Amino acid sequence: MKKIIKDFKFKVKVIENIWITLKDGTRLSSRIWFPQTDEKLPAILEYIPYRKNDGTRTRDEPMHGYFAGNGYVVVRVDMRGSGESDGLLKDEYLKQEQDDALELIEWIAKQEWCNGKVGMMGKSWGGFNSLQVAARRPKNLKAIIVVGFTDDRYNEDIHYKGGCLLNDNFWWGNIMLAYQARFVDPKIDPNGREKWLHRLENMPLWPALWMEHNLKDKYWKHGSVSENYEDIQVPVFALDGWADSYTNPVFTLMQGLKVPRKAIIGPWAHVYPHDGFPAPAMGFLQEALKWWDKWLKDEDNDVLDCPMIQAYIEDPLKPSSKVSEVKGRFVGLESYPSKDINYHTYFLNPYRLTQEKSKQSIKINTPQNHGLLAGEWMGAVVLGESPADQRLDDGLAVVFESEILQDEFDVLGYPLLKVKLNSDKPKAMLFAQLSEVREDGFVQRVSYGVLNLALNKERSEFTPLIKNEWIQRELRLDCVDIVLLR
Image 1 (cartoon, rainbow, N blue to C red):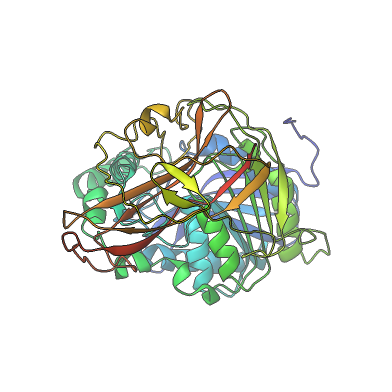
Image 2: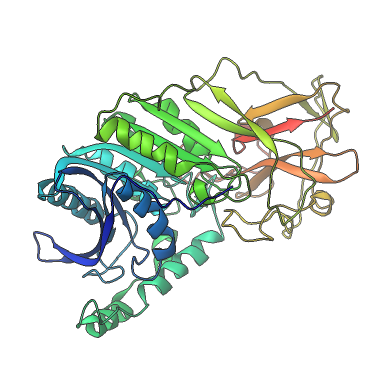
């Protein structure tokens, strides 16, 4: 249950706009929360393109006000080409974006109100670039917090999944085009009209840029910290929710990093966890504050006295496109991969999942309109976006069904499908999903995955299928958490 906190260690003064001038003369627009004290304090940077003045304002105010009231200067910056900042935002995660962040961190650390220690945080874009900037190792950056992020821009982001183009590539790119096309506040920048017109005339169409890179090439490897996790040398606190689309990177990041780290996965969509929806939310601000206190104020606290990954195991839920609350419980993994996770193997037999192998084959020719009830790729706290009852989609697919389970057990991890197949076409896609058939007949989707069969394993080359030639493929479905009932 949320409550309003009014008593803080420090009174806070908010400066609506402070220009930060970079070495090339570009001015970045910032909003800064100052605790009222003469003491030099650590600072927290959030650096995103979502318009501090009228975009994320209602989210920023309580979160950054909380950190400031507890003794942190919080600097919320609109990136080059966004909000009131100068310039043009030409694409996602460019080196220029990282270079600007390095200058920002240096600028913050040198201010008279800063003790030289800086943390960086963010959700979505801000989570992405916090990792990317940490990999550049600025000397004053001491810790980061990332929410709803990726470590692999090709395989685990909004553009491609399993080498297949996502519809979301289109709407996301156009949303960002619309964001940058919004008017620049003349109260902050008297030359805002000229800046706005320049963006209208020169902003590229991002979805077209991304579709030019349909393979995993240098374009996607840039900014993907999974290319070398050891580049990151500061502590990392990672969070996401099962209703979001970025839970897979939580596990790969925890596995790849060697620094102090922890992760929490709840039931939420693509939001900060203190605003968590579907409920229940969590006390993210309190946990984040302990993280900052540990690494920016050198406090000896219990922030790491927990399993490395804390994941919310969801109780079975009647499928619905409108999910407001998910009951369940948290479990802990001390490491990942975890010795506490065991695989159960089932074999594909004609329309059955069994414990016995089969040499029989089945023809699959799924209609193009399969997936009508799949819900959205990314949960964004919109009622109607969750996967609905899957029986209609199952009627358009080939279904393999197990016997009724004899025991109740938790499922946590990546389902893996191994198949031997052939195709009569040079291009083909494999889709698979794991579902629970409930006693009442409803079918709840548990996880899914897609795979472009005409790409090599690294998804870096197009390798057309040879007609009717048998091949073996592995499809890793999305990480899952659920209690399966007998």
